[in-house]
Length: 203
Image 1 (cartoon, rainbow, N blue to C red):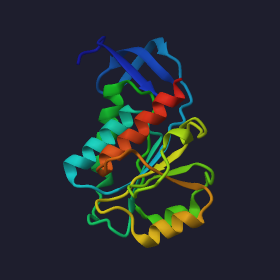
Image 2: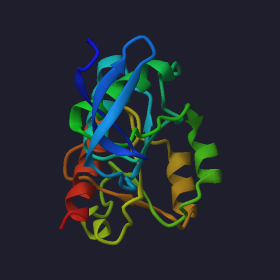
Image 3: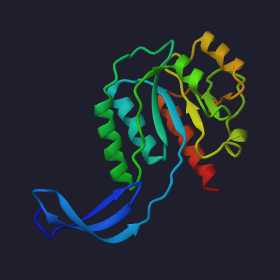
């Protein structure tokens, strides 16, 4: 890229700008036109167990496209994979943000135990848990009642343990909900949550 080349620069605080490269060595650009103003974005939090590489990449990439506000990898009782390369997945978040035209870069947190997450969770009124058990209530009645910054929790292969379900039952801010008649894989459930939430927020 040579001096005088035109690019688009963006971030959540300043919006998107048309800019011209002034100094290649120092990386200096002159912003000439605001194309999109900054906008506060409050997407839902997503809590998910660590998955194998390609499945985790799919979950993270598509979650960003669907408007996730923050990504929270977790360790559950049935989580088999314990290694999480945060730096690698931050690159995936950045690439997905650029691809889909978002101005904000949703944070991806370091993994924590599910029990620690529940102990410190601040939005004590809006955590929906994907429940694969028979008899769980449908998610649909909950979607028009939760705020844009709601939280979704999806389980690992094999589902949540009996002890984890017992913990959910004790916490008044948690609702266990069904995603349908079939058992969904973790990444499918996560994206179904986010797609339904986005659809209801836009109606």
